[in-house]
Amino acid sequence: MALFSEQLGFTYVVGTAVGRKVSLVYEAQSQDTASPRLSSICPGWVLYAEKTHPEAIAHMSTVKSAQQITGTILKRVVSKEKAIDSTNVYHLTVMPCFDKKLEAARADNAADVDGVITPKELIMMLDEMNISVKLSTGAPQYDKYSPPQFPQWSWTSDIGSVSGGYAVNYLRAKQAELESEPNYERENFSIESIEGKNPDVYELRLIYNGDKVASAAVVNGFRNIQNLVRKLKGPKKVNPLAARRRARLKKDEPTQPTADPTQCDYVEIMACPAGCINGGGQVQAPEGTSSKEWIDETTQLYGHIPKFDAVSHASDVKQYFSDFCHDYGVNADQVVNTKFTPVEKEEPALGTKW
Image (cartoon, rainbow, N blue to C red; front, top):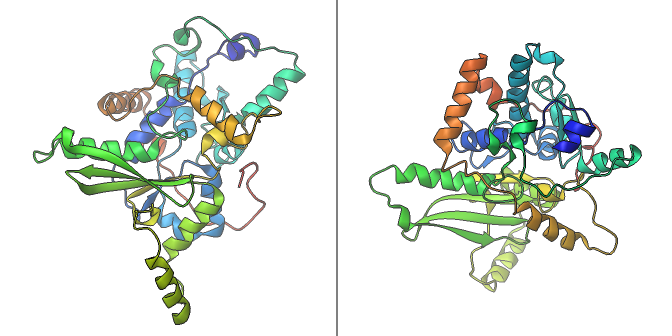
């Protein structure tokens, strides 16, 4: 925070968790999409779907990402506090993925985020400017660097995956919804994890008294996304002999359940293997450190960030967002939702690590 404010000259520095909490809360609400509902916060995945698999758009959630929702909130808050037009507020984000630049440039997002840099680019820029970063050992001074009355939980993390925890929080919100009904008791709920064919695919099942009541999946990496979209299209015509051969082989396979995202209610999708912690714009592993070791190390560090439970505090998040929309005269639907349209194929996304 001090780096951006005191050395780079930014007026305010905030985290994107304000937008993520709003995104998580709205993502858990019902939407008019085909099943399974597919998350749309990863711009690499969105661009791929719009260009290559427009049939997937019917499945895609319309809820915006944390970057865009935070941008709308921050620009309105700062413009009012400084008594200037929001177009005179320059909003820069630091994101783990180069494709966030493309997300910010979308027609319905252009007013929310003016610039995007990645951690990799930030380090290069600081090196060129001969600026050294010193880690502070004191308590974070959120109020010093954020606009007046901006929520301190803008710097918090979330329960679940290193990509925002959308899948697990979808199920936790579903559990909270069921707990409000008279026939469900909290102590009888559990969430089970079902492994997929590789570590980048897994399914989470919300269980009540031994029965599955809801399910969500996590799908990371381009190859796994391709498999998901292919299955959503439905089976192709197959050779009867080949089908019988596969059936015989299947009998010999273990009966342990395997994750099947196509049968879930919701799917969290990230184009990068291992999710956003391994985004194409992240700082690369030091020499002598393997990619897996580096991901494990950064994941461990990420886990130390204090968490603010958007599901347990859903009423607080909703109240904050409702007050914001009322005080700043903005339409909640326009802040939260977007739309997707099939587009002609162009060059590949800037930095997605397929």
